Length: 199
Image (cartoon, rainbow, N blue to C red):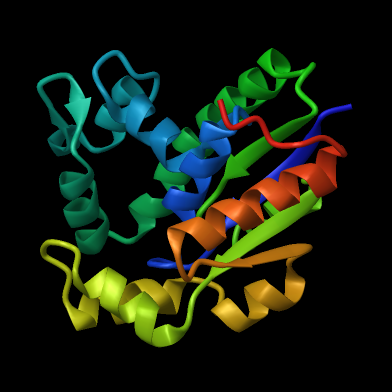
């Protein structure tokens, strides 16, 4: 049986870096954000239905996330309609990934809003990555175009870090790359009973 491990963490906690470490150790990773990017990209399954809902969002056969944000800011009711289009497509992509990896002992599902969307109900375990607030703020504010106000807005939409940690089955503190990598390898061993493949 494949163990489905959910990976989540607030912005700036090191989730993408941790997901990459699982990949480096040959653990299949499904990325919710990357899936949405693909669905919105050229030839993506979300392009036509989203363009039908918000025509201005389509540029060069792709959906512009900036245009979507502007449209939703102008008419918040569009968000519900957008989610009704995108969520089933994301779920279908995830189901295909799980089917393709049916023989893998462990898969990781990288889901930013894991608790917010109730994904913990169907996962076997959840890993939350965390860091101290100072480290988190320094990482996020170093991103191009990020402001303190925007950072605070994002945090307000996310389940608080303390609550995520309290609900998690596993927690990794992302202080250094070496320590995080070691903790990822240890968790793989704990979950699968075998050593991590660092190939």
